[in-house]
Image (cartoon, rainbow, N blue to C red; front, top):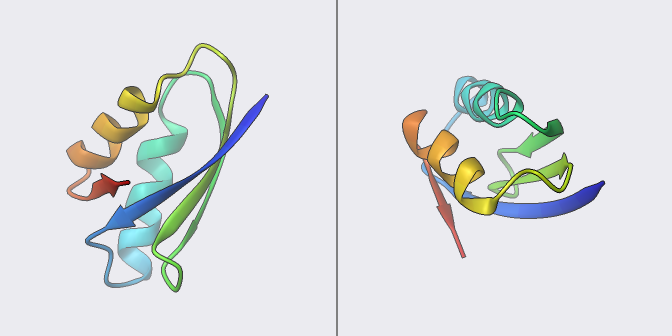
Length: 68
């Protein structure tokens, strides 16, 4: 199990947090996503089948952006 913190751009409210959480948890292999509006980040736990690009794409499709 791997844990990574992703910086998320574009969130402005709790509704945004919910969308990002749902998007990340829908990625196959993601076990959990804890999204913080205050920190503009998501702490994601996932197995070794998940690529960063998979998570970035899911966040982008939800209308937000993963930044480095």
